[in-house]
Image (cartoon, rainbow, N blue to C red; front, side, top):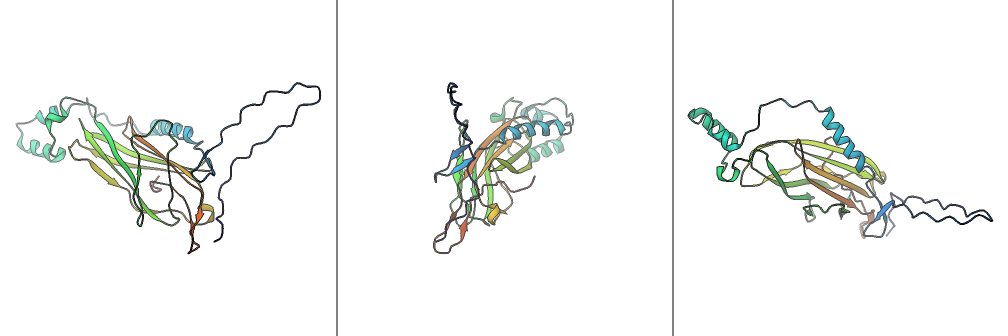
Amino acid sequence: MSSAVEAISCPKVDVPAGPEPGEPAKEAAPPAEHCDTAPNGKCAPRCHGEEEEEEEDEEDEEKAPKAIDLGPMVSIKEQLEKDKDDESLRRWKEQLLGGVDLNSVGETLEPDVKIMSLSILSPGRPDIVLPLPVEPNGKGVWFTLKEGSPYRLKFTFSVSNNIVSGLRYTNTVWKTGLKVDRAKEMLGTFSPQLEPYTYVTPEDTTPSGMFARGSYSARTKVRTSSTTTASATWRSTTPSTSAGSGRRRADHPSLPPSVA
């Protein structure tokens, strides 16, 4: 069994020269933290571009066209009670909102969106379920996907209190500390209901080839037009070689697919 080709390496640390004769020794500075330790003991780069991602999110908000002024926000209950004498308009609202329980929505104006589950689907292996809620400053979830593998991202979410508009997700991928992909997709507008919504991304395939193999870090955010609803981070290990077939395996969490 041939050994796998390492696609990444740990950052090089320069060792300073010693002090000149007669000069007092200077206190050594603590080493900089350049990488996290993967489950296989290898050095995996951190997401040095995460701060850059936050800046890009702010820039996107600034560049985005101003939303159309639709007037003051009102509760679902008030919306349904308006024009209740107009039979056609009432039926249209019921069809648009579905079976909304007025007792559950009440008078709340702001919608409440909760991500209930987030998982990665790939044929031939168990689903990879990402833990929610995400721990602050967590190192993410490690997993392995074979190169050239089809995959989808699936998440379920609930909507309550009011209609949520502009729900979208973004995904940013780093390799050896450099951002290699950023995907964005608008999910749409959803009315409150008791049953959770389920969304599955279109199928995509992980990259293959020597230069595509390596350790990756990825972060997915599901957010509304004003707030971030959920954020999940996952990381991959370094490539290995499959025994018997000799086919190389690669770790690649670039999810969801490139639809930026």
